[in-house]
Image 1 (cartoon, rainbow, N blue to C red):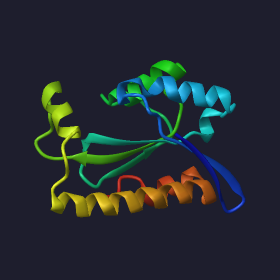
Image 2: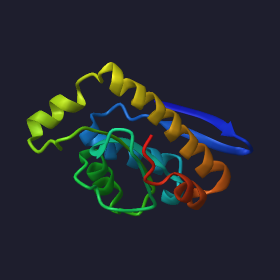
Image 3: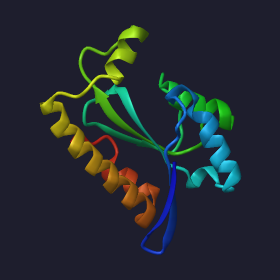
Length: 148
């Protein structure tokens, strides 16, 4: 799914891959190639059950950190050199078994967790707006590792 718009004077394109998360790299590679997007202009936004619920982590580059969607993107782009915004959805204890992890990420949030998720979405929106209007470094300094 693709949509375009403006933030101030800057044109942005939002893309939501319709592939399974583990295959999201295919979609990201196709969109970066077809739109001729420089990887420094890309911002991958993902949920991450390895981060506590409500935590935001913004990085300019890095490994997959065990996230299968990021692994797929790294594999298909042949690089770890792209910005990413990881939004924590994890709970203690951290899930280690893959079957439990898939059950967890496909389950619904409780009403108390949903309140945090709503704040997390608003915070992620602020991160993106700041990155586009004021630059990645400013967004990183202002929002990196915050807990909503």
